Image (cartoon, rainbow, N blue to C red):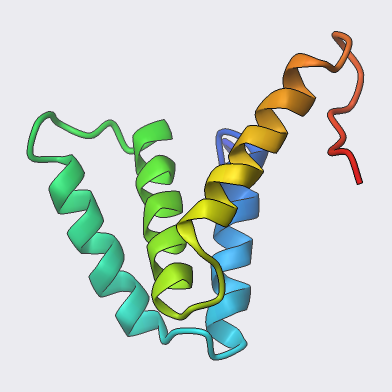
Length: 102
């Protein structure tokens, strides 16, 4: 049996979102790979990367930076969304889907 391409659903989601944004012309794929490679190099300075969770955390960091540089979002908006998800997660009963408040 083949192993899944992604370890976690959010890995696939952030990958798909990045591909979609590139196809929509938000950034070119060569620009993405250059920037992502630089992020990976920075993350790998202090320790060896395992290619899993740390890889996708670097992916998200790069995507956030690209979107901020393209003026499609701001750091404060990202921070607020992270906090909104944290609050939603902490207030959701175990086994229930996490939903953001409107």
